[in-house]
Length: 416
Length: 117
Picture 1: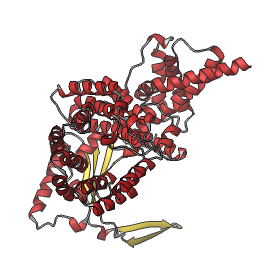
Picture 2 (picture 1 turned 45 degrees about the horizontal axis):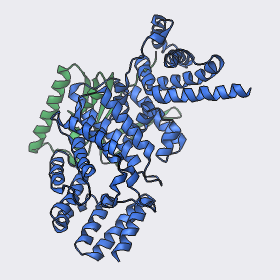
Picture 3 (picture 1 turned 135 degrees about the vertical axis):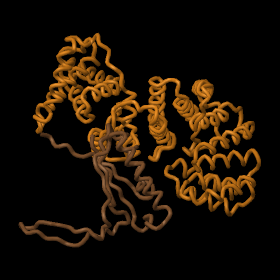
Picture 4 (picture 1 turned 30 degrees about the vertical axis):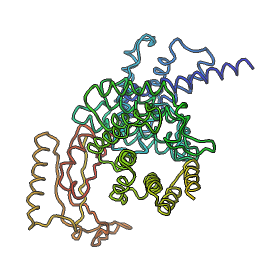
């Protein structure tokens, strides 16, 4: 009996690992075959549960992924047969049974078609709410459990499950095509996909939860970015985004101080930066830039690369950074880029010049914590202590994590 | 797949018929109509009289009751609609974006329910 339960635990572990590694590939194929997102998801879950029973009894099959695939298709037929509107579904059932009959008895030799690119574009469709896109991508493409996603976004498990179910139904009912977008819609749809990946990364980079850095979310986003780059090579903005994330992530060990407060670039110990990731990000960025189609992610990565490769804060090439920000602000209308350009300007041309540029974006970024942090820093560097204190307090009150609050507490202490 | 595009506009910001922009707006509808017909997606479409002409009908205990209104309190009112037969949601969105009402109001796109036989 003891042996049996260890075996069951091993099998359960193997199934979890398979769901995590191959879940996206299996689901992408199933959605293509079944044409119903929710049914595909439910059938895959059924198959994974059934695997636990069968594999504990007989051991792992020759090709576990192919076994799951075939089991999931049969579960789908079963679910359709049992559904209330059985007669209406008869066309789908016929289609599935036909597919089942055509498949060779031993599917293990047949490779499972990888349709994850379709799946990614479907999960990141702009007709879905932003948070829903993020959650659905993490669930369906990355294979995270609903509970893990709920915890990452501080939602109840029930609410997250509901959100995912609603999203899958909307995809099927509203006719969101399960396909890679055609050239005329490509740029817009790709933008949405890249935004979702970067949102996942940012949630890990500066988390809204108590813990400031959520490493696993950053790594998930990088994994997703790499997958997208592999599925769709020659797209420089995908490479640019992966490079950007790698270059940011390389600094993770240096970003928090002894008391858990965030450290600015100036105060980070550059010896703690991950040189291997920096070099990988830099190489990828070069490859992207050589394609001659620059975009916002490549330019942001180029700026972070300058920081990453600079031996010290003092030796940073601020003029180069200002130039890149100018290009970036020219192609992307985003006040946050303008704010960052002002920071670079304060080192290239002095804090007075920078301070004068801050006013025009004040009304747009009034609720944005980094705006007040930048304002405070510029006031402090130009000798306006009272204004600096006020701005630091505003920034402190807009902070969402302890690490940020500690940072501003320290700044306020240093000012007096 | 058939989609209904419901056109919501705010009467306060609607283009008045005597303004020079009115012609431009009507030309926009003309272009939309021609595109729908050319691409074979047009099923039907019409504009509605303002919501001040609306009558609500209810049947309660087998008796028909009617009432003026609702004179929508919300700023944006249903002003017209199209039914378009498109391949997928992306196409439906692309066609809906041609409706001039989308530029100053909003167009809601919803798939038409197909009942199981």
